[in-house]
Image (cartoon, rainbow, N blue to C red):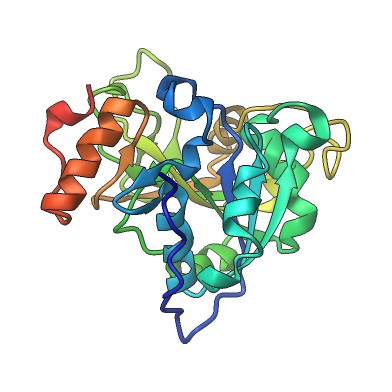
Length: 271
C-alpha cells in the first residue's frame, strides 16, 4: 500500500534563503524485492514515504526550494510528490535516468542539479536515510555561508554495519580523512551536509557545469581532496539516525516507530 503524502505541514516563520537537494536516484539493491516496484525513498516508514520525513523537516525549518534527483523508477517520485506544494515546498526535479539512462552517483547528480539550485550554498540530504530528529538549522547555514569551508558535514556514531566509520572530527571542528592505518577515531557521514557550489567545479571537480554528458562520479574523492586542504568542517549528530538499508532494518524501524517512536534502536537492529 502506498504511504500517503501528509498535507498538514507547519512551516517555519523564518524562511531560509538556502535551497536543498534531496538525493533519490539510487537503485536500492539491498532493499530488493521491495525496490523492484518502488523507489527506495518512497518506501513507507511509520505511515509516510521515507523521504517525506526529510522533506517535512526541511519545510518545518524554513527551506522553501528543493531539488529532487531521480533515477530508478523515476516517474513514481514526481507522481507522488508533485510540485511540493502539499508539503509547503517548491520542488524541481533532475531526472537522471530519464535523461541519461541511469543515475549519476552523488557528485555527478549534484553537478547536474546545480543550475536548478540557483544558490552558492545549499543543503544536501539523502532521501533514503531516516533522521527524524535532525534540524536544518538556518543559523548553521548562515554560519557556513559566512565562512570559507567547502562543506560542513553531520557525522553520526558508527552503526554496526559500518564500524570503521568515514571521517575523523578534530576538536576544532575540522573533518579529516586519515589513512586506513591511522588509529584516529572516525565517525560515519550521515549523508546530511551543507555544501558550497565551488566544490563542484575546478580544481575539485572536473565535470563540466550542468553535467551535460551525464558523467557519473562519486562525492567522496571531492570531500577527501577538500579535507586535505582543511576546507571541510563537521559536527556530531546524536539524534535518531538510520541507514535503512535492508528490508529487515525497515521492518524493525516500523516496529519502533509504532510502539516507542522516540526510542533509539538497540545495537542489533543494524546487523
